Amino acid sequence: MLAMDYRGPYRVRVEEKKMPRIEHPRDAIVRVTRSCICGSDLHLYHGMVPDTRVGTTFGHEFCGIVEEVGDEVTNLKAGDHVLVPFNIACGQCHFCKQGLFGNCHESNPQATAVGGIFGYSHTAGGFQGGQAEYARVPYADFGATLIPDWMDPDDAVLLTDVVPTGYQAAEMGGIQKGDTVVIFGAGPVGLMAARSAWLFGAGRVIVFDHLEYRLEFARTFGPAEVYNFKEVDDVVVFMKKTTDGLGADVAIDAVGGDAAGNALQWLFGTKLKLEAGNAIALHWAINSVKKGGIVSIVGVYGPTGNIVPIGNVVNKGLTLRANQASVKRLLPRLIDHVKAGRINPKAMITHRIPLEDIADAYHMFSAKLDNCIKPVLIP
Ligand code: NAD
Ligand code: ZN
Image 1 (tube, rainbow, N blue to C red):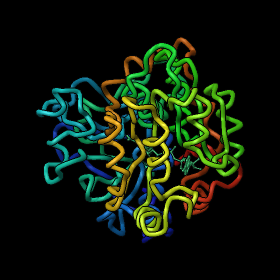
Image 2 (spheres, rainbow, N blue to C red):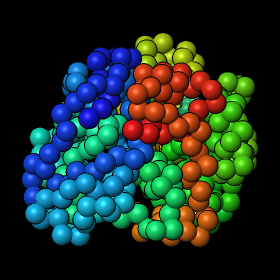
Image 3 (cartoon, rainbow, N blue to C red):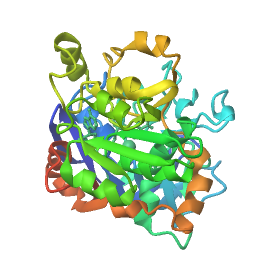
């Protein structure tokens, strides 16, 4: 079968690889029909995630058709259309029992933090991903979820990650009725956080980015008040001014950072490098939320992402909430929201690209060319 193959930072290609097989009775093999590239894949692509081995197939946002199931998978059969949450979760361990499916212990027992994730380095369990014609889905009886008949597969594939992640970002913000919510990042995750903030009762939603085409999209998709951070003299001062000197009630980091950028930012100060990969969004989130406010972090950080203004977190008595999204927990609610038209995930899909053109697709999404918001690979 054809599958994406990581060769090193900024180098990906398509290779002929061995077909995956059932390795455990709870496995299923899925023929992939849609597979997205995520902002999280870019951290791997940029080489910031430890133990990303050459030869790994990325891809944690996919849907498709069940080809074969293991003996213990009694709830699925060949021919079923399924979406596959990016978290590999057993559904039974200490953490899964609490609904923390992003922290499953069974799927990644070596790790102290994250559970297993498809195609996301050996730090996240060393699983092969779904940017391929076929994928092995461990714990398929728990994770793989039937796509309702009425649902467009373009919506379904976005329910594997960015929709629940944006939604959980808003949920972790503990948004109260009328709250002002500021969101850093207008990528698919930030966009979904903006949309979701309203569902939790926000009174005002503000989005910062520097890509005009994404801000323009956020203006109507959120909807949101949008600002280009490169055109605002000081984001923190601006946020104070626009909230009667208080700051936002809730701030969401939907940016994350790359290791090298974080270190640079620490060495040279926050004004140096105003782009992704420097934890500036997290500084802004912490500093522009009001005292007693909540900062919700879903942006992914590399090993040096610990460089945050922790003193201000303490002195301001902030609550920081963060996690990998718990996709399976949120799916029933999100499927309802899609059905009722309260969220329209597929509006974010800007590109459909044959799997064979993977190198171009990664380059485009990384460099944010051609007004790209969400690219979907079609095997
Ligand atoms: P993306 O690359 O499409 O979007 C990131 C956006 O942030 C870009 O539009 C960029 O211009 C903007 N940006 C960069 N620096 C900024 C700053 N200082 N302030 C405001 N905006 C800034 O990525 P995405 O797919 O939307 O993902 C966003 C983040 O969420 C990534 O770190 C990704 O790894 C993470 N993520 C986390 C989870 C989870 O479960 N926690 C799941 C999916 C993605
Ligand atoms: Zn993702």
